[in-house]
Image (cartoon, rainbow, N blue to C red; front, side, top):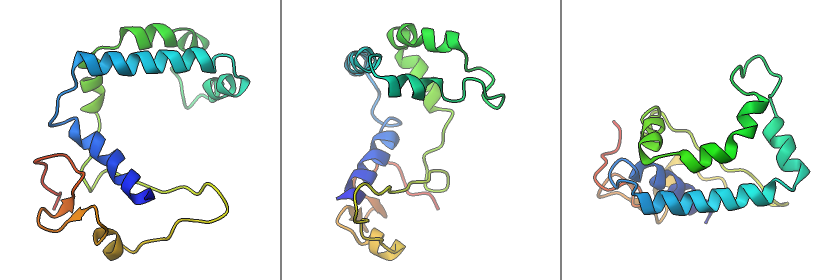
Length: 140
C-alpha cells in the first residue's frame, strides 16, 4: 500500500499540468492550511521546525519577518502564484525522485524496478502507472 500512496502523490503533482486548479480548491486548501497553522502555533516543536535554518547563511532569505508573515502569505496566495511555483519544477521520470521512509519496527518490502512496474498500479498498455496524470506520456 505504501507504493500506492507514493504513486498517488506523484500523480497529484503531475495532474496539475492537465487539470487546472480552481479557486474553490485553493480556498479549501487555504482553510485547511490556516486552521492547521493556528493549531500548530501552540506547539513548541512546530516553532522549532519553523526556526530551523533561521541563522544559516545558506538560507539567506529566511528571517523572523518571514515567520511573522506566514499567515498573511497563506491568506494572499493565488492560483497564479501556485502555477508560477509549479512551473519551476519538472515532474517527469528523469527529474523526480521518490523514497519510502520507515515508521515502525518492520520495513516495507523492497521492490526491484521490475517488481515495482509489475505492481497493480502499473498500466503496461500506457507505459505508466495508472495514477499518473492523464495524457502525459512517459519520459523516454
